[in-house]
Length: 239
Image (cartoon, rainbow, N blue to C red; front, side):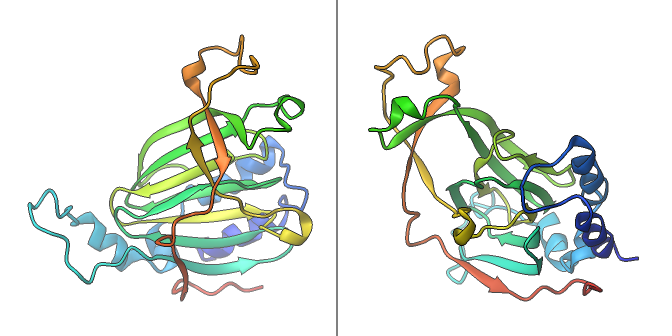
């Protein structure tokens, strides 16, 4: 059985529309996802190119004019309980800071190197922030990842539910969302940015070092942020 088919079969059992998964369910999905290789999803030629890729800065030359910053999304599968797809991200392109309300997300770096920055909301501050557009968030991750590596897992309230990606080299990330985004069900994708804000109300008082926290406000992504559908070239699923 093809690896992507195994992944689909394993996802059908534990993933559901309520977005909350047991540790055993997470482990079962990761047991297959962690072993997905570029050749399993039709990305071997792209991965091979990245293995010999060198940044224009390293080579001391200007980027070629026809290089594109457009991010490509290769859709594989979606139902009400989960979706599977791949983001192919050119070097230096960014997926801005965004959230996954009520969702569990598995992100597997297929090839390349990416910088990940992620946060979780500080809980128990809703009443104090009714008049504020900004909310405090705790830093969860701020660093680079290079393939091959294990999958990242984020839960509805922990693990870095608000995150951003910046491609250091061309890279591809296989995402499983459970459940998928759905505005009708209150799972709308919102984008955020850091903002300057002090803590006059003492919201973060006695919460460890304040440097571990930032203030985030909702913000529209720049016009340069574009994601286009692309053709999935890997093995077809048998549904």
